[in-house]
Length: 456
Image 1 (cartoon, helix red, strand yellow):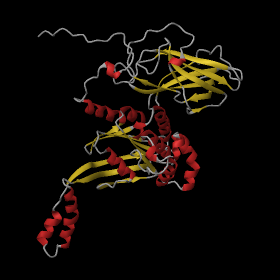
Image 2 (cartoon, rainbow, N blue to C red):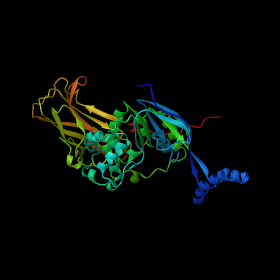
Image 3 (cartoon, rainbow, N blue to C red):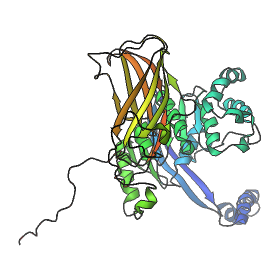
Image 4 (cartoon, helix red, strand yellow):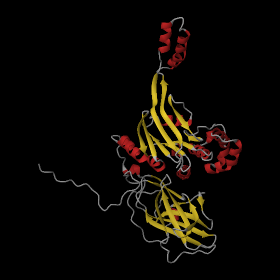
């Protein structure tokens, strides 16, 4: 990690003038200037005109300082109106601090507000040129990267439609695609990723993890999981003041205690929080394969990589008992299956799956490497095989998750990856209850036992 400071903020203060009446804005613009003109003719009157203020000051930031170096990611947290966005705008140079200074070395790119930097009357293609040029790219550079930007955004024919016809998710896709291709050294994100769909969010977080190795990320949001998953450090701002700064885990623990202490809403009824069947399903009879028509399947294009010597197709996730599967409650006996088509001869095939949360962090996984160590699975060129993983779905935290299947050959220590599909299956989890952790523990006993009263 480089020790050269790329961002240094020292003693930042930002004040806004608040006027009780629109007329006061005019008075403030006229009377002090009039006082300077009358300073020689009527000094007492001039002083009263100069010294009179028709506004009150609202301090959005007070004495904030921090530093960041290449490879560091910093989360900015705080309640609405705490000053987070003000800080990010000062770092980006779109706001000037009332006091203090910010030094940024390198090219900076930002996702501050959806649609910021876009002209709603221009098409998506035209806005790529507009936004990328604002971020420092020459026209020749934009033209060279145009196809990659359009492919990353994945908005199809809408690229030639006006931005004003886009949904918020489409606008975010295009904005992120641009900043991902401008070779920025510093990236500032202000809650923009919250509007994206699950598959595109996974794509963005994969890109962000690669960016973190070569740049600086400032990430502002209320999502504790995103802050902990992306950032090493965090700054908690409350009413313009730095309440706490340090390791992300320490700051987020203190912030969550502050937010939830005495402010927890009453728990919603189970029916409202978990639509559909909520009973713990009993395992169904043994089957050759679950019925994929009653479950989830891979649809459309997915990002993937590999040698190309084999290809994964027809990925499905279904309940073993044959009941429909639209979302996960927790406890379902499910089956993940995919077909493998060999393009070349494969010796010692290994199938595997990884379950990731919405931040793209692997939380569960399994593979077949140990099953066939003594009798390897070989496929001739043109041969096919079916990989099947049957397991009980754990009780996960509410949210979006994805499953990535993979097929390789060799051993775990030394293998060739033939095909890995990112986020082939995306599913939602609606648990019957939530304990605030990634998943619910399977315990043999739980309860509260009242102890006898102590004598004396």
